[in-house]
Structures are given as C-alpha cells and as structure tokens.
Image 1 (cartoon, rainbow, N blue to C red):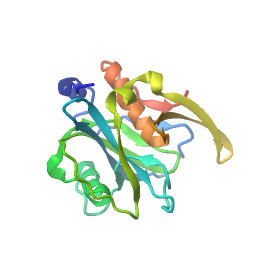
Image 2: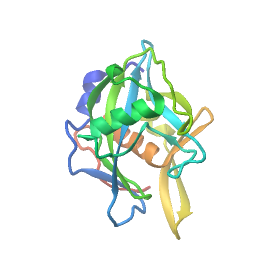
Image 3: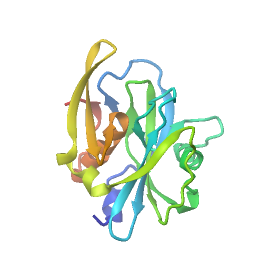
Image 4: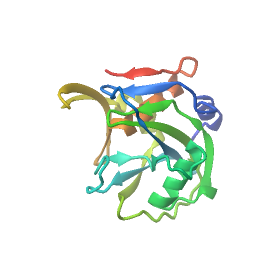
Amino acid sequence: MMIDRQRLKASLLAEPTADFVEEDGAPGQILTPAAVLFPIVRHPARATVLLTQRTAHLRDHAGQVSFPGGRVEAVDTSPIETALRESEEEIGLPREQVEILGFLPEYRTGTGFRVTPVVALVEPPLVLHPDPFEVAEVFEVPLAFLLDPANHQQHAAHYRGALRHYYAMPYDGHFIWGATAGMIRSLSERWGRQDAPPCGILTV
C-alpha cells in the first residue's frame, strides 16, 4: 500500500480537540496525560507502521507492543513535543525525519492514561538506537494490514473484577492489542469513514 498523504491528512484532526475514545472499563478518575507518536514509514514500495515491544520489567505495560511515547513531562510544550522527545529517547528516531500530519482523538485507557496520538510520516532510511532498558524490539507492520478491519480481532478478558473488551491485531508473532490496537482501530475507522469519525466508548 502506497500512502495517500492527502487522504491520510484529511482523516486526522488538525489540532487536539475534546473528542476522545475511551477503553471499555476506563476509570472514572483523574487521568495522567501522555502522548505517543504514530509513525508511518514512507518506504518506496509500501508504507509501514513502526512499533516497539516493551521490555518485561517496566512498571507500565510491560512486554506489550506500543507506539513510542510516554507521559507528558514539565519540559514538554505540546503533545507533539512529548511524542518527539519520547521517540528520540526510546528508539533514537531523529525528529528531522518526522513530518507531523495531525492527531487522532485522545485515547483514554483502562490503566489511567489519556493519550494524544500524534500521527506522522517518517522518511527512511531508519538508523535507530533503541534504549535497551525500555525497548526489547523495534519492528514494522504494513499499514495496509493494520487499516484492514478484517485483521481486527475482538477479545474479552476479566480485569479488576469485570469483563473488558478490546481489539487485537496479531502479526508475524507479535500480539498487538490494548491501547495500541485501539488507536490503530481509530485511524482505520476514520480512514474508511472520514465524514463521521467515531468517538465514545470503545466496545464490541
């Protein structure tokens, strides 16, 4: 899949807004602000999405597949700054290779975060330097695979005494699920239905 830059940009929010997607079971409490980079790598033959496998010893989301990103720090002037700073720190992605296109609705997680997804194009070649403390692996998944609803599985599990529903997108030995899959699903829906982007509770 070659990236349709104009269509992709039209699928996004120009600025963060009050729109949000909320995970099934998201807590009704104060949420910690965070931001992630949704990096779409513009290879000549096809576009891919850059993802990380977090190390097993981390306090938050250990071992999970994630976008590069993290909590908003006092030094950050915007979600873009958070996403770029964290991407540099986590995987060594130079911000000079990143072109910000827009935003997805804020994503509110069941683990207490409100995440601003910052969607960007990344120019190859990639010479990355992952932080071994935080990142076990960096890998790429074809954008066409992730945008195809046929590859979006629906799962359920008991968590904190209640049945929670979530999306998953297994690919080449990686189990993409939870907030990462939810944000991918958000882009997929906006891509396919730009005139009425979804917002609200994320359930099956």
